[in-house]
Length: 138
View 1 (cartoon, rainbow, N blue to C red):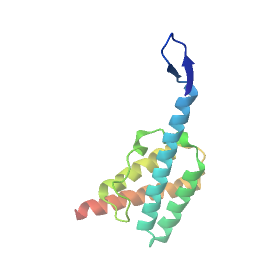
View 2: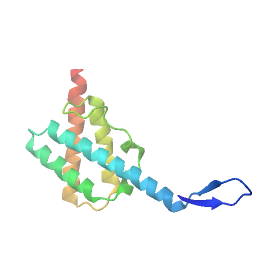
View 3: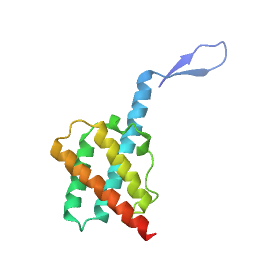
View 4: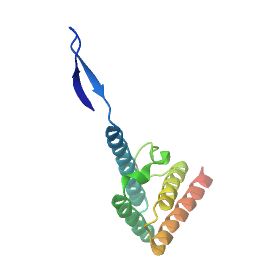
């Protein structure tokens, strides 16, 4: 945003001009917020299931992978919704929310090896199982 003086007879006012690059900066900041909100949710998931070593390793690798990818992968509106409160207790709908985010991220990025994809598909299965288990209890 640039502010330049606008000449008028006796009025002193400013004219604000928006440039297209300002929109990209704002969008990038929003995508960064979405990315780090998702990483925060993954870290909560990690601490909620820290007793399961295999899942903990997969979640931590997904966190590292998420840190390394570009913010434009978080364009989807699924990343705007966040957990109501960050805690180690997950409700069934929160498992579905994080499952959807993982699923979108895996299909938007093509830089994963087959082994990494299999690991993340296992994490998706884990979230589905947790959702079904929690929803049967309630």
